[in-house]
Length: 171
Image (cartoon, rainbow, N blue to C red; front, side):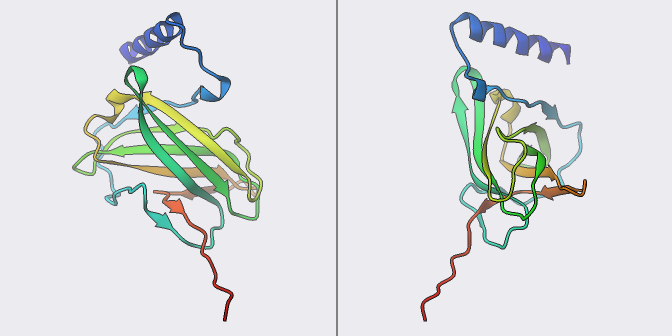
């Protein structure tokens, strides 16, 4: 545990000492949690081109992309939208990484740039993590969580890319 903290601090110092400057939007509020031996119960594979067409009643994932970044990091970027009728507060985006045995390798969360989303409002999110946290990855899933006005929690597990149904009005 202390080694990971020391390593993270060392990398931060190195990045800043070589002149790497982060913009405000690039800071990530995230923490990587390693699996403690629990097997994942969800065996559905995530596909970046999978779609979910429905009459959404809450948060939806509009886009996502996991890229390799410099200095041994990977970056997950995406766009979410509140398709519900109520304001979504304290929105959290969670990335869960699975190995070939469908076991959880780890999990990480971040907050979108706009944490309170009124109906139809969109927000980007960005998550940066060491490439070491993805060793053995077969697939990953993205989940969304938010607080509803009545205090209850909204949750979308294994979010697929949302596509609005197009209704053909011609007869």
